[in-house]
Each structure stands twice: as C-alpha cells, then as structure tokens.
Length: 317
Image 1 (tube, one colour):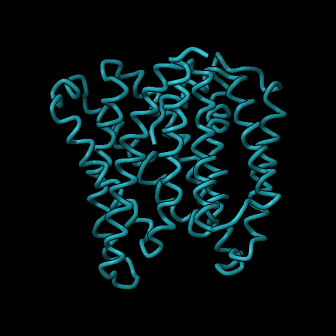
Image 2: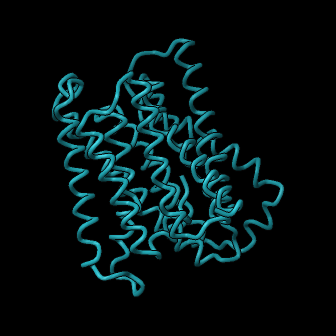
C-alpha cells in the first residue's frame, strides 16, 4: 500500500478514535442533562472554531448570502444540537454499545436516502446488506432490553433510549446529506471553512441552551462535577469537533471516497471499546454478533454505492 494511502488510513482511524469519545462523554458526567452537555460542548466548539476562522473571516464569509446562513443554522441544529441531545439520552438509557451500533448505521441510512438518485445502484443489489443491518438493529434492541441495567432504568426508559439513538441516526444522516448539498451550492466555500462556520453558528445556538440547562430540575453541582463537566466539554470540543474533523479532512485528501466511507466504521468500533472498558466488561455474544453484522453491512453498502460514500465523506461530527 502506498505511503500516502497508509497515512490516509491512519488519519481515518485517528478521527474515528476521537469521534468515539462523544459516546463516552455522557457517562463521564452523568449529572449533566442532555441540554447541559450540548451547551458545554458546543459553546467550547464555537469558541475554538471562531478563533480558527477569525483571521480569514471576510474571505470565508464573502460568498455567503442569507439563504446560505439559514442553511448553516439548519445544519447546526440537525447535525450538532439535536443529534447530540438525542445521543446523550440514548447513551444514558440504552447504553453506549446500543447507541454506538445504531448511530454507526449512518452510511447505510445515507444510501437508503439516495436510492432515487440517478447514480444509485438497483435496490436488489442492496437487499442482503440492508437485511443484515436491520437484523443487527433488531439484535441490539433486544439485547439492550435484556440487560440487567435495562431493568434498573425501566423497560420503557430503555425503549425511549433506543428511540433516541434512532433519532440521532436520522438527525446525523439528514445532516450528512444536507451538508453535502450545502457545500455543492456554496462551492466557493472550502469544506474546512464550512465546518468551522458551522461550529461558529452552533456555538451561537448553544448560548440559547444555557438558560434551559440552568433551569432544568436536578441537584446542585459541587466543584467536582463542574470540573468534570468543563474538562469533558473542552476535551470533546477540541478532540472530536476540531482535531477529529481535521484528521478526517486529511484522510479525504489521501484516500479514494469508496475507501473513505468505510472509515466511518472506526468511530463505532472505538466507541464500543471505550464503552466496554468503562463498564469493565466484554461484549456479550449478541453484541458481538451485532457488531460483526453492522460492520459487514456498512462495508457492503459503501462498496456497492460510491455516491453514498461521497455524501458521508463530506459530513462532520
């Protein structure tokens, strides 16, 4: 394998390792509500993104009209605020493994979305991998409801957690497609500047979450909770949103898109590893089978449908 391709794979794996931290964050600060977690992460992300894009602000925004800014607001809501809030609820109620495996189906969901596109492959060629994906989701849901901690939170709460994880999958799939279309309409804006501008808009929207987070019922935080909250928010903002995206952009320059789409799998795998290490256990037999089914389904679908790989590759965590 050429050195550039190896470097691209390393960058793809590195971005997956950093993005996987997002799934562990809610477990590290269980006292924080979804609104508080989203506000903390995206305020930090917005500040960092503003610092990075500010030196070339005029050049980065010169081509943006009102419609483009409205698009950034919509993308920030779907791909960041709504996605992360739903993910936090999913992790709390259904667990890291179930949430990571469901959200890991993003490439499959994007392919389903694009079946009517002119470049789409015939539906018949995707039946088997899609059935495999559906089977994996079914196993994930069944296993999540059978785990002892599911009974601790309640079966209905676990079902709500699974539904929120599915909602996070839909939100980020909508974002991946919408982001690709936004970049196509605003082709004078680079992918990197588009990502940073989305971060700035997301940070501005996160300010609106602060009063909601402060007014949410719950116990008062002591100094230890605030320390963990600020550290996790800053680490996720810098690691996942800034460094992870930078590594992903570099990988996209060094690998063909069909190969790049498969790198998404590493986010799910790292999230699973982090979750299992945090919980101090090995995956159950059903979780192991679901992991294999999910990985095979995603790779199978991406290989069968190159345009879907393009859409996923232009996404942003």
